Length: 178
Image (cartoon, rainbow, N blue to C red; front, side, top):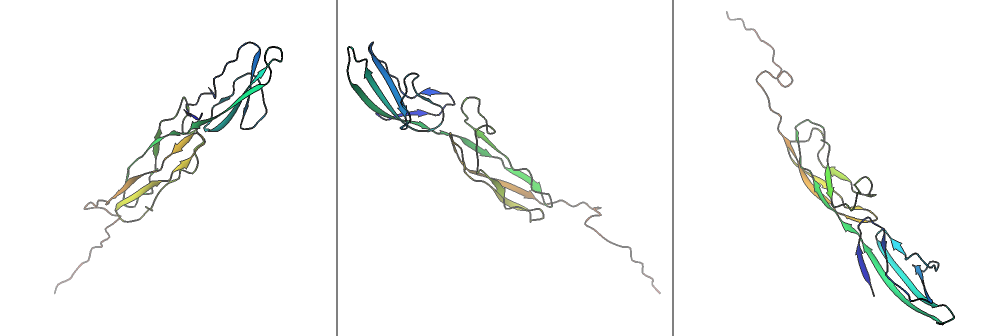
């Protein structure tokens, strides 16, 4: 019988089983080696095919009985917020930031192994005032669904003042009238 467990950053039993005296339980995961106790566990997202075998003691019980169970530990979905930014004409590209919410347990963005989630904008220093997209590409992680997202970088016009020497160059001209 298929089973689904959500990823929760804990090590969880893949099956629950018990045997009467004179019987022993044996397990193997994903066609690995057979083993008795402990019951197989998993922490990371993935598909686990668990074979459970009940073996008789040869005294009161003979033979074996087997069952196979497929357990899927599903990835946990994160939520992302890409932050809107502002700049003034002539400024360098500001630091582009995003925030993820929804990590399991004590995991964080730094410990979750997220890769491929590049954040960028089309704005470059000196580009005209206006709106520019900020784009976060979707990432990947072993235990998480890592979405992309978007926001806007607003580049405001640079204001001028009446005595702004950086933008106004004028020399006095003298006239002589006869």
